[in-house]
Image (cartoon, rainbow, N blue to C red):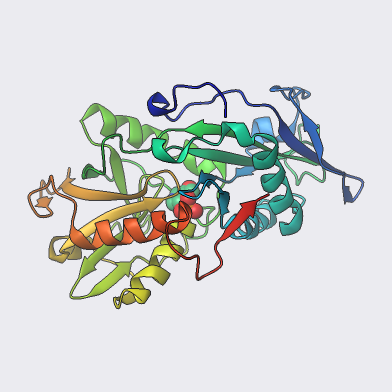
Amino acid sequence: MKNIDWNNIGFDYMPTNCNVRAYYKDGAWSELEYTDNEYINMHMATTCLHYGLECFEGLKAFRGADGKVRLFRADENGRRMESSARKLCLPVPPVEMFVKACYEVVKRNIEFVPPYESGASLYLRPVLLGTKVGIGVKASHEAMFFVFCSPVGPYFKGGMKPIKVIIDRVQDRAAPRGTGDIKAGGNYASSIFSGEKAHQLGYSNVMYLDATEHKYIEECGAANFFGIKDGKYITPKSPSILPSITNKSLRTLAEDMGLKVEERPVPVEELASFEEAGACGTAAVISPIGYVFDIDTEEKITYGDGQTVGKTCLALYNKLQDIQYGRAEDKFGWTIEII
Ligand SMILES: *Cc1c(COP(=O)(O)O)cnc(C)c1O
């Protein structure tokens, strides 16, 4: 393993041995190429730079308690990138190519997968760019796909801690028939203003509401939302929510734990009735929500004492991490061992 201060890494880019790339041109994908070059070279009139014809993914590999390195649900990320590419009219990277690229990146950077004890992991960032050169607004029939990785520290240093979120209607993240359901960089562009405002006010995330009526919960920052009450795991359903793979996994685990799973519109007024609430995504798995403030109505909601992680959030978190770190049997076949 590399000589890195594993206990003190954050969520930043760190150079590794290599990244992998493939190019789409004349109707076909190239073979995967491996390089230590951290730069990409492109013409200034490349379409992704002007019109946002870009999408990405985020997933992790973990060094387990048994020393084995496991990649978590890469096929799901591959399928999601396929749907992102289709909606952006970009060449579609086949799932097999996507998974192979992820596997190879981990394998070729295996000494950058943090040691088990550190609670850290290797973050993978697959990216798809429309690379056609031109200034007209049209689909790009040329593309570049690449995957790089970087070791990242545990999201919550010193254990999970409930977060504070703000409901702010100053900006909508995604429109019902827009690109909210795909992982396009543009969705992040349209949430940066409200996100920065929330940080200035001391909140870690913005709770985004539906853009039509501002009545229903959509997402919590760049993470999905879920609430727990009456033995149920409840998560919003909407055409402008990004289908989180963490949320999908938690739904399976919740059912496995005997909870009933509901996917349906969740009105803002329902927030106060939840026993526990959380945001979920690859970065933190679960960020338990301790406090919600609605900036327009000035309503305040506190879950428990606002400081303690609820028991269902903790149980779900542990169940998922146990699979990721190889402490529990992977009975759903979610991980690939890197050998
Ligand atoms: C990436 C992302 C998520 C989380 O998805 P995971 O697959 O669980 O990492 C949730 N919401 C948005 C808007 C995202 O971009």
